[in-house]
Amino acid sequence: MGSGAKPFPALFLPSRRRCRVVPECWEGCIPVTVNFQFPFSLFSYPMRAACGILNASKSVLNLQSEFRESFMKRNRVLTVLLMLSMLGPAAAPAWGANKEMVQLQTQVEQLQQQMTAMQRSFDERMGVMKNLVEQDTDAINKAAAAINGLQSTLQTNLQKEQGDNSTRLDQLSGQIQSLNDTMDELKVRMAKVSKQLEDMQSAQQSVAAQQSQQQAQQQAAASAPPPDVLYNNGLRDYNGAKNDLATQEFSDYVKFYPDTELAGNAYFYMGEIQYRQANYQQAAQSYDQVLQSFPSGNKAASAQLKKGFALIELGKQDDGVTELRHLLQRYPHAPEALQARDRLRKLGIAVKSAQTK
Image 1 (tube, rainbow, N blue to C red):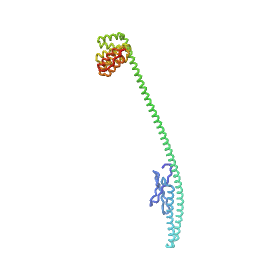
Image 2: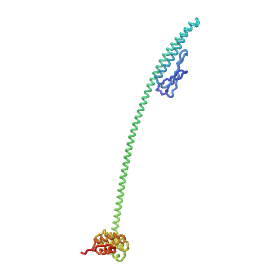
Image 3: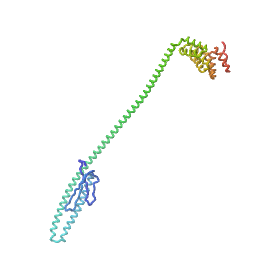
Image 4: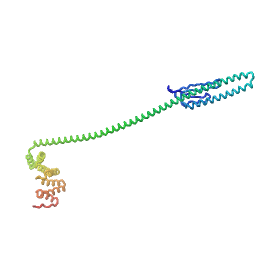
């Protein structure tokens, strides 16, 4: 038991009867027996004091009631003994009656005095016990109030701490989400910047390639023969049936001098060489280059005529016939128109004759 707590007696009835034990007791307490011995060994009333807590008022009232009941029983016994002592001289010899009567009266008076003193002492002790019980009850109530207050304070602090932790957790979650959003935005920006850098690098590479190509063309043009010399050499080798050499010379011409008027003639002669070699697909492309790049050149009618012939040779008769009809519409009086009509008649296609002006 702590030093601040006061002991509270645990009460027991005499040993021949069942003990009425204290229902609640402080853990670790050691009971101490206190005996009240009455005169002449007529009866004794043992009590055991122990630290612990009873229902104070109930225990004290039970003890007082039991003591009074026992006292009344002993008083009745004394009364009976007194009556017997008074009746005894009638049957006893006369010589011993007075002496015994005096002794018995003396003993009864002493017994009554002792009973009165014992009653007074018992009342005093019971008052002390009541005071102790009240003090212990007050201390227990104060301790319970303190415990309840401490529990309430702890619960309030715990709830406040939980609320603070929840708020902090929400704040941290919001900050983390904001950081994630910022990271996503930075990733998108980085991707855009990377794409722009790639485009710039591609543009730079393209510009560099174009510049390199232009420089190469300029260097080649600087080292190439003059345009009229190169064209005449190609035309000479074409007329001499030197097809490979003529093709190379015409290719160099359109490469170094692509914007001159004779470039269309060079494409046409390359198509003629390809047509002679039965390379009709490549020949059709060369003729088409003349029509697309030089539609008003002096080889435009011849290029359209030969393109139609090449398509017919490739088995694309409808496309070839379409080209020949366009030729007749655009150049109805050109010498190439006569060849176109003749080819259409051979194919069994009726054509209108050109009207002479």
